[in-house]
Image (tube, rainbow, N blue to C red; front, side):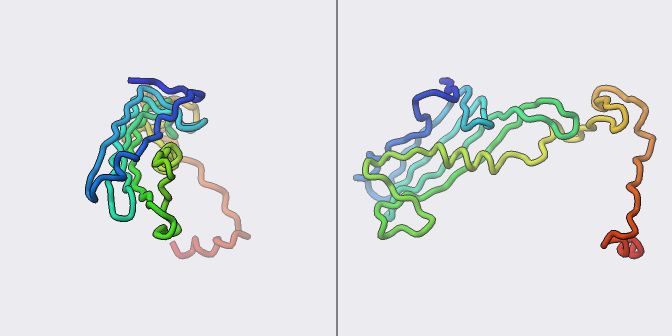
Length: 180
């Protein structure tokens, strides 16, 4: 399984679709991808990356569909420990043959029939990253009083109720408390 560091010269997501152009409508070709480590951008490095890109010949152009998976090191928002998160995402794009048939959202197949899916893969991977990653279901997090990892040790502070925020009489929402 090859490894591609951030400054590697090869383009790991560049594929040539020239062999699909003379084929009949419905012809498809698969492009498997597998890397032990790959850096998609400055803040997105994946390990155990696998993907499968399928190119289908259509009357309008080439339909690209891809399924991808890789492990991403994230910090848990509850206990602050680093953990591996399995990121899974997919892409679907149509590369049309000529500009006359293209809509605003379509991509144009270049004259050399070579496309680089790197930017599409990177964008979709960023969209599928969790906003608040949690290392495991039921993670207890850190004690708000002493900072002890409650997954590892019981500090005895869980019986203390959290402090209630002070009430602001001038708040525009102050009247809502009477509705409760």
